[in-house]
Image (cartoon, rainbow, N blue to C red; front, side, top):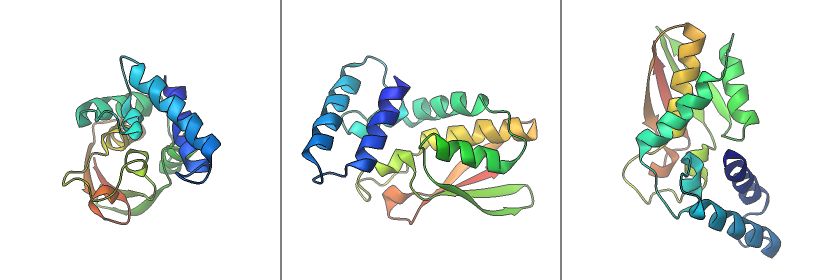
Length: 161
């Protein structure tokens, strides 16, 4: 299932809407396959057919973050980038608080900015929460400070712990 979602995201990145009828046909087939699947993970909202509760997406992100055994913050960010979830960078680390910005957050990439008044980057927040908890060997709290869907330049998350 996750493979379908990742493939859909990659196809949409390679063939932007209106650029290739072949890419649009392939993306349409994947959209239909995802909608027909009973349990749809976080990025399936990319298809625009279903909006998944943010907590479900956060739980899926936590599952992915728990798979890591990072020794450095860079490993957490590199994994997110290698999985196609966005380009993440640390903006600052100060007094136990780390601010991470996703410049092309997967949760937002496939949604039109400005169509909501709430940020919904639950997958990214859950992933960062679990990965940083593994890194620090303890509980952490993640909150979203900015969201591209709300018109910000990127999605920013504050990791405390």
